[in-house]
Length: 343
Image (cartoon, helix red, strand yellow):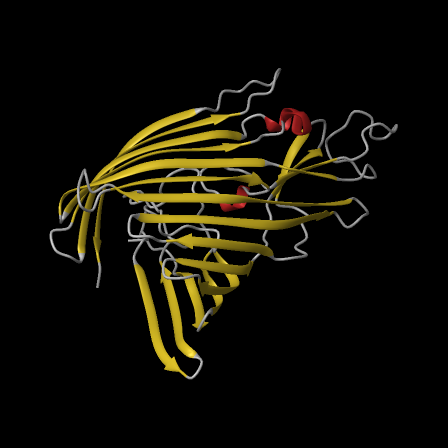
């Protein structure tokens, strides 16, 4: 029920081109529980307007590739994918018959992790003291020939950390995406092979399933008497921003048994560079590598109903620091049945 989605969409001709608006939400918000009423709050997914080539509002990030996308029963899809909706201003233009270009400035929300001197030990502090000074700059080149699709996108980001008492640092980062879908009529007229790779420094927020943070904050001064040998944040020792490397990729195959019955298979993995040298013992247990495998059957008994049965296996591998080894690796499998009704 939480995945239930409601959308209001309009198209209006104007002297400046087509005016489009969309408001969309689902019930995947907070609140409710399975012990009582299973209620969940409504949340906004998309809300934007588009006049001619210019879009403003919240929708899928321009960094995303909607031509090469997963088809899973599991709501969160495959590991290592690019997946987010956020506020943006986007300009789109055609480049001939089968190509287009998107340019956007988007919400710059950052994620960080820092090692802090606590009472007798190091403790992790996340998403603290970042300062959004500039939007994320995103560009996407789309090529959609008759045999499939190619999407090449990139994002440039500016990171700034400041704790308000003089410890501050900044860095530039970003990353890229390449997605390819190739139709394979020799296996079936609607069949296709898809592949995606995403990677970069400071790209963690744009990828799912890896637990990646955009950057690590540590002391810039680790040699003076007060700061000697301490990477963990210490008052008066300055700040050093080190961007984390994140990488995600997946491959998939879609086969149509009939016009109303199809199967999908995916292998996906995501990597997160856990900076053990900077974080020390605090790095123990942080996610380094996630892998998911999906295999499903999707049936459309009628055009507006989809019934899916899926097997999914996941592996999660974490950092283990010498002297603080703590096995938090995890492995799990599940079978899911989903039913979707469109109106």
